[in-house]
Amino acid sequence: MASPAPVPASPGSSSQKKRGATESIGLYAVQCCECHKWRTVSTKDEFETIRENFTEDPWFCSKRPECSCEDPPDIEYDSSRIWVIDKPNIPKPPPKTERLVIMRGDLSKMDIYYVLPNGKRARGIGDVQKFLDTNPEYKDRISAESFSFTVPKIVEETVSQSSLWKTKKAKKQDKINASSSKKDKANASSSEN
Image (cartoon, rainbow, N blue to C red; front, side, top):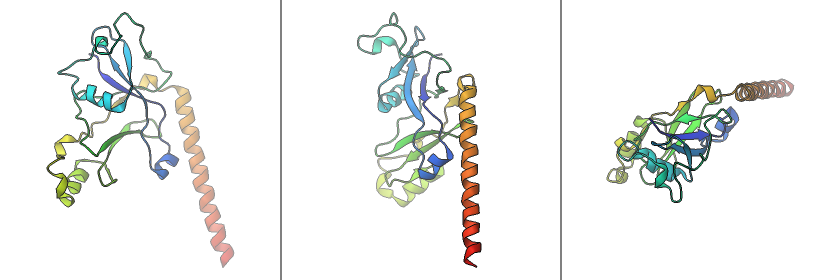
């Protein structure tokens, strides 16, 4: 069965997380239910609309203007990038919220967060309910059922050895940086005495 697929550009690193991780998705694509070719989707909003209605309204090349199944694919499914497959029928985020998909630095899985109207991140349905309880003015526009923390599946065969190597190298550098920072602090406090 064809499915919508966000295609991440790069995993988050621990240094990104310190600054406030940004979404890992670099490209959105959907697979035609007839020819099975991958077509890029121009915006996150368009992708979320396709994903929300995918079972009831399957996607075909003919839905895009001037596109048919005879045209070559927009993107090839290969290991030139890391692919993740999203579940169909995940609801679009409620107004004034945003769904973020962030790949862990070790490429093991994705994490889902929602940026709520107050700018805070919800990591689970409990955070959403807490927000609604403390902000009752949103209860008529936002319901907890409108949020899905279902994570996309990373397609393991598209995680190349070079991606793993780069990730391990970045983690090693993060450890070295953290270690030298601790040593600098220890040296600074011992020289004060």
